[in-house]
Image 1: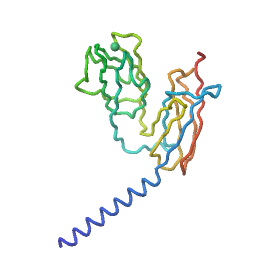
Image 2: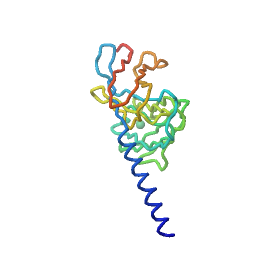
Image 3: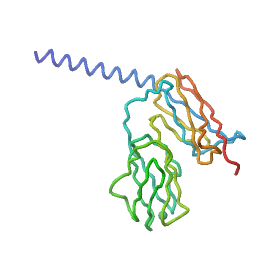
Length: 206
Ligand SMILES: [Cu+2]
C-alpha cells in the first residue's frame, strides 16, 4: 500500500516537472522598440501586452521599489501589475513626504526618513503621479496595468517583455510625454516564437 502511494506521488511529481519544462520551453520574449515621430529611440516608455482573448493568467503581484536619491525618485517611471506592493526607501539624509492625488491610488507617506514600515499596494489600474510635499521638483510616474506582461524601454528605446505564452496579443505603450495620453499607441501581433516589433509614440513637441 505504502509503495503504491509513493509510486503515485513520484508519478505526480514527474508530471509536474515535465509540465514545468513544457511551459518554460514555450515562454516567449518580445523585444519592443519605442520610437518617436522622427524615429529616435524613446527611453522610459512603459509597455505591456494583453492577450487578444482577454484571458490573463492568475495574478501573482510582486513587489517593487521606488527610491529617493539626491531629491529625485529613482526610477522616474515604473510599470507594475495591479496589486503590486511598492516600498519607498528614503536614501537621502533629509526627510521626504511622498504623496499622490491620482484616482487609482491616493495616499501620503507623512514626512519620514529611512524605510517606511509598510509598502503601498497599488490596487487599481491606471496612471499614478507621485510628488513630494517638500520638494516640488520631485516627480515619478507609476503605470499600473492588470497584465503581468510588462516592460520598460532602456536608453536605447528597447523594452523586453518575457514569459509570454504563444498567442495573439495587443501591445500598448505609454510615455509621460505622449501628445494624447488617452490614445495609447498599440500593435496587434500573433507570436509563436521570440519576436520584435516597433511602436511609434506620438510625443508632444519639446
Ligand atoms: Cu522630498
